[in-house]
Image (cartoon, rainbow, N blue to C red):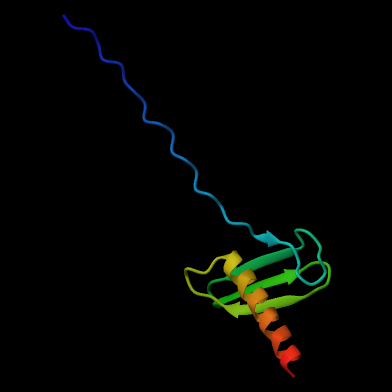
Length: 87
């Protein structure tokens, strides 16, 4: 008679990295004060600072994440600052 084979367990799966949902405010400099929310039914994403009340709203799709809304806010504020410098 032969020996029983050991049942080898598969290695544990690595957890998927999660993206942040709170960010540092670019206007007032507070850390972790910008919250993001996505309403997929209405198709709107919103980021708002709890300290200085600065907000940004944009349209979203199924692939949009909170970091995308924050990045769009930063891009739009940089564009607005460049327009002011050009005038």
